[in-house]
Length: 285
View: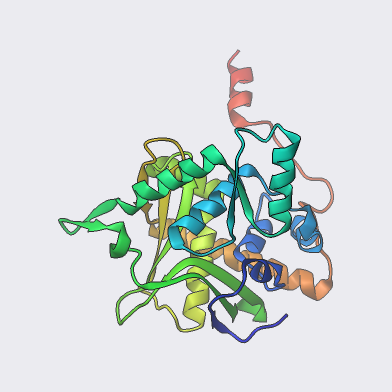
């Protein structure tokens, strides 16, 4: 379904993800090491998308922090090993709800408690995350716009603050194995976080909700005690890389739509190499 460019509040979770406009997840699938063929398969087979326990925990985390999202169902069991627990889990997912084991739910609640008490140092002052960074605004805001080559695009931010004349700061919540900045940077490369940051900011700029001063902040929080949070902003070089990759993905998408071809990795025979470190060990023997 095609939508008019602009912001949309209260779009149901399932309705947003069922929309055919190009999304942040889509441009990642169009970007190496993925390829257009994988993107096309994912679009044609949404039922093939596997839901993991980690994804359920992440969704529950977002719901508890921002107060919006699918309903959480607590399963009174220690593990998913029993048939009854798995049946309750599958029934909850079938209804669009998020199932969590009892102990997992308590752990997520503790993460949220730590996050809500967190403060950052800024300008010599201690600024609480709530409401200093995540203040007045709306959760799970969706938006549509037309980008390069007339491609219809969509995005959905965790939280869209009210600007009130100030610079727009868009927070994005990430549960992480490590919130240490260098480690997070490595994860950001693997998970295409720079593309996500550029995608949302370019969409908000396209519909007049952001300007060039807008920034995208990742709020990373570790999933193991003591659940350390860290606010992280990708540097200018990283953001330019995300912009370049998104431009390439949009060009690829437009070409694939025009020709109705969705290629794999490389045409013909591709040349590959063993890892450099391995070749070095052979040569040094």
